[in-house]
Length: 269
Ligand SMILES: Nc1ncnc2c1ncn2[C@@H]1O[C@H](COP(=O)(O)OP(=O)(O)OP(=O)(O)O)[C@@H](O)[C@H]1O
Image (tube, rainbow, N blue to C red; front, side):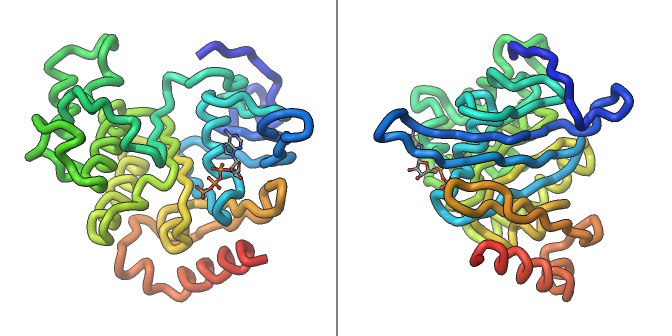
């Protein structure tokens, strides 16, 4: 990452309080008569090891926002900062899982080699790389198809391979754009719990976009609701549900239902 230090108002006596901070971010596609302003003056932050979910109606600019945060798309206004440094290229400590997972896997590489890809060129010893890849594939239930090619797998399996690649990289921050959208309910629950475990065991910071309000409430410490056109943050909902969370008992709690209603109300407004 190329980075320039920028004084960060979120700093506390010189210490960085937030991992990610987004300040007054704006994004306009195109210029002149065809310009389309998608995001305006959007601000929020993510603390170290925090799990933040972003929800909002389709087309509101969630993917655009993640592309700006991952350094793939420069915002046209405001800034996105990682540890007080302006993000202006893909940060090394970030792992990404985007919606278009089918395009992110290389068809000429086996599943195992695809998952290994981000580790190539690193100083991690070969044996450790293979260990990490095998562990990540086992976590997402793909150990049996390690030697197959992406085009030999179903859509859901390809999506899990993309998730395994992000896990094997062991990023400090995970940016995920509807990573579980095409998975069956049971696999989805398993992978949600895997993410929560990664956060509690390794302290990974997660920013997670989803259409599924129940998923957002189940996973998050805070849910950021986007709305408006151009979009910005309309509400940030704290999720005080206890950890470890459980797919059955957590979702059955009255607080869970109240939070779901609160988020849904904001989206519908
Ligand atoms: N490269 C681009 N050029 C022009 N407009 C774009 C481009 N990418 C996205 N848009 C527009 O920006 C808006 C926001 O798109 P984006 O994909 O960020 O929304 P989203 O909230 O992620 O949508 P969904 O929930 O349906 O995935 C849409 O109207 C889309 O058409």
